[in-house]
Image (cartoon, rainbow, N blue to C red; front, side, top):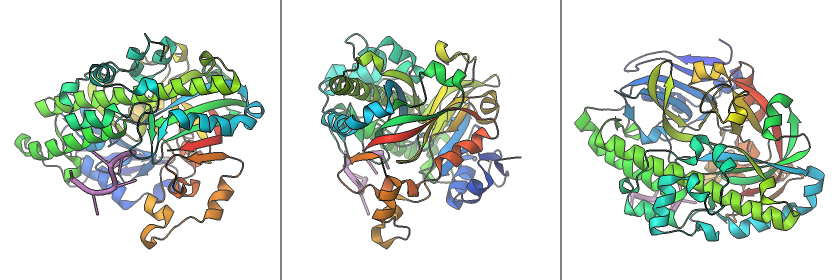
Length: 470
DNA sequence: ATGTTC
């Protein structure tokens, strides 16, 4: 089968696993990532497991993994959701030509850094992100719709966010005090690592029927925000990994590694995790919304653009577990570094996109193209309505930066060459080599390896003009 | 990803 590899059923595996990718991509996948897939295939109630071409080794399930579990008899596993719960991306169309915006890129980036905290441990700078107590509970339990009454989100923003920016169940009573303390000062912050805010140019529209409803026009500007649930989601993940490690033996669950600690979905611990995970998911959507609100104000000040002109195309998460129906069965779909991309006609797709399919946003690495694609029936059948979430690393952070003498260090000159013509700033104030384009697979090849077999249809390719790295 | 080794 073209662009697919099967990991055959062996040992305790309950099923075979499909990995998508071109031949060169499949050949280069780390053995450890494949072993992580085989391990996950042993978990109770697992009824489907696939991996995307941006697969690489993670904690528990590899990044790029999609694990479907029977909703009645299956387990839930924090390691199959990811540490950064509802890490995700939103894309925004900006009705300005790229030539028009170029002289203002530096001013826009520095304007954004003044209101959006960046770097490890960054704290809220946005006035509207500074919430505590009851207000914090309201936001993480209610999500983006809670921002509408004060005008921090529009009904249109809500409509164009996955799950309308509000996942249930979400009850803060299932979140530790420590997680709430870490999270309450971090709404409206970018964080670090591969998180970024990028101003882009629409380099190519592949299909006007798809790009039209998204407001994407060749030569015009587009904006991307990539971040997650910060210390809040991380603490929730760590808390429940620990809880489940201790509880799972009571349920006679013995995964091949504790990194895949799991409990039954229908256990008190499983239900509590899903409710806490819901809070983290809502936190992340609120986080991206507050950042967009602040960015709209910066664009208004610098370019005189009314806030309503920056239209949210879509907001997708790529680290989450959600109940969905596939093939007549109710399943808990764990997507870890994988993006939901439902096809045309699916009721969860906003009305304006119902005829074309849900936009999925696939960022490249810093300096390389990003894509907006739509899901297909093929992706629904073969991958539980999922596509890749990015390019996927080929080099660890430590390798890229040459830490502890590790091989593979990218030279400063090589990095500068790849970033030619792009304005970039780092919120962390450190070197940017860990996120250099050379540390990632080629985003074009990754997306094409799915497009070539009909799992996605490309709407547009976007290239960076200015990047704020977290 | 992450107050980056509770």
